[in-house]
Image (cartoon, rainbow, N blue to C red; front, side):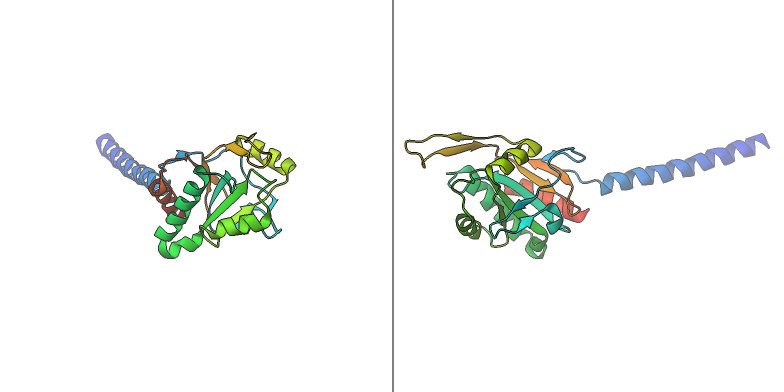
Length: 202
């Protein structure tokens, strides 16, 4: 009798182990693995409230259901900004029909020169659906602190020929508006594409 009970217990434990193993496998399968820096659960860069190039105040809720990529830069940037925005446009094209579920957002770190009409023309160079946000100097200081980004004006030969040093990474949010990935500058379009696909597939 005891032997039979022991066998039953072992069988039950076997079933439990298989069940738990299946659950573990499911958990691993459902959790996205990113090529960029996984920042899931971060306590910073959760939202914004800034006017876009048309003067409409935007927040993360406006883009619910989409993967959102936020990049900080300025329109007179010679290399980093156009490269990053071009890669983002490339990713959107590569997604095909799913490209409609990707939203690019460009936050200006140069509110003095990046006027609404300048930003409109700049976004049109990459993708007409991309949104530019234009903070006031005070708003820029606040969002830079919240997003942990760096920016600094570097004077040029004339008062208007200055450049802006700034952080060059991108913040990637899932369709629920949660920050999930930080993409380092220079990672390339294929890395960003893989991570956007992973978020869309969750």
